[in-house]
Each structure stands twice: as structure tokens, then as C-alpha cells.
Amino acid sequence: MMNMKKIDPITLDFSRSLGFLIHDVARLLRRAFDRRVKHIGLTRAQWFVLAHLHRADGQTQTALAEELDMERAPLGKLIDRLEDSGWIERRPDPQDRRMKRIFKTSKTDPIMTDMKAVSESVYAQALKGVSTAQREQFIDMLALLKGNLIRSEEENSDCT
Image (cartoon, rainbow, N blue to C red; front, side, top):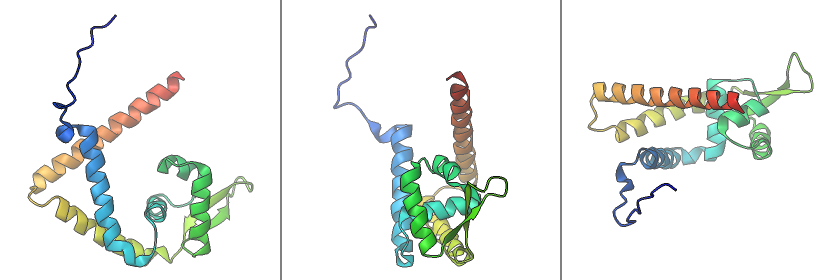
């Protein structure tokens, strides 16, 4: 049996834990962003869908659900609301008419410009005091972490 050292809960310090810091920074960035775009009337989940479609328009609901790490049914309700409001449209897949692809409409273009400006403002506030070189190094490190995790996930999915 492995000898497990008992950890004193009082001495646990998560203030420098990678996972906690990434989670907390992401949460605080989302909150700051939400405050600044509240007037447009879209929920964070709706913004997230539109942002992902802006990055890769014309996805299937299944692909979008996977990318957003959401179940298909709740995503379907979000898509219904976005479609009813004219933000997106569903179109038949050219190769498989049973499948629908999701596309953003021209209504999203002006808000994407606003959204980019707001995000740049939020990032500037968050990165205050960080040099350009440090910023680039930080982004490079995050991209490396992301790539490592994606490769690890792909390798582990091949084993199952």
C-alpha cells in the first residue's frame, strides 16, 4: 500500500495553482466582458455560440456542441433562440440533406466588431503592467499548453 502523506488543509495554497488561476482569470474575464456587452441583450452562452461561428461558420450542431463542450439538446435550444432572433440560420448540408449546418447572419457582423473592441479593452485592463514581450511569451505558453492537452486527448482517445 502506498504511503500517503496527510495534507494539512490550512496550509493548502491554491493562489498559485495553475488550474485555479486559469479558471479564476477566465471567470473574471467573462464577468468583465458580460458587464460591457449587457446592453446588446445576448446571454453569455449565446455570445459563445456566435463567437465560435464567427471563427468557424457552417458547423453542424454536433461539431459545435463538441467544440463548446455542451450537450446537443441545450445547444439546440440556444440555436433555436438565436435563429428566432435572426442571429443565425440553419441550412441543409450539401452532401447530406438530413444534416443541417449553422451559419451566422449578417446581423452578427456589427456586433462582432463591437465584441472585438470590448474584448481588447478587457484584455488591456487585465494585462496592465505586462510588457509586450511578456504578453507574447504568455500567449505562446498558453498556446503550447493547449496544443499539449489536445495531443494528449487525441492520444488517449486512440487507446479507448
